[in-house]
Image 1 (cartoon, rainbow, N blue to C red):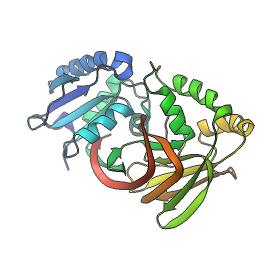
Image 2: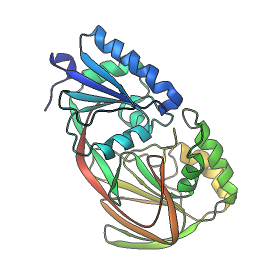
Image 3: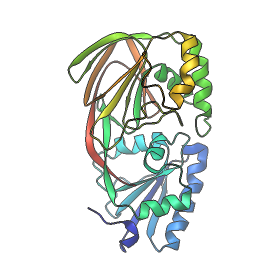
Image 4: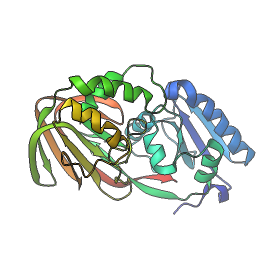
Length: 289
């Protein structure tokens, strides 16, 4: 196993950020991280937008952004084997929170430097990887409406769009095969999660762990709008798993289809498809946390 970076004298870190991540906040954070590393005599280089085609001259990669930036990286650099560090520079930093909590920047940099890399799972859907989660139905419609909008950090943007869909969204009929078990019905939403939190702070799958070799499937019955509104704060706090209209299980493979094209998101990126083939990629990524 690679040693902690603070004891590795030959460390050379590639710092990656996207100019739009966090409504531009990630760029400023990149220079702050560079200065913190320089004060510890640790070599680094900042890349904004124009990322290298390979990282042969580096020992580590630090990604500054939210779930969307991580999603871009894992799909554009599928052969990467270098350890990663994750800095919360996006508008939705749910996977970062899963690993590090709410550490301030200087403490976060120190945490990453002293941590040996650990193995992290990814999800795979129709050939595309996701790191935090995939949402179909209600959550897909919310992500669709958020797509292209100027977002605020945390769950403020997400909450506003959720409330708009509480009344008007119509549940769809789905057929699923989850690790060989056949399931069908009208459901408000179907989520497959690697991390426990989404939407900038909603604890949708609070028991999900990104290093256990499983994905967490959760699906909610086609409940009335009044019940949706009543239980939204309960879902936000992650206290919904015992409700009679909420169902879940840990899975390794899932096939799902519907009578109409499904709007869904992966780590906030919006897609549409008639059927989905989902599986877990256990321990495929290394992150210092």
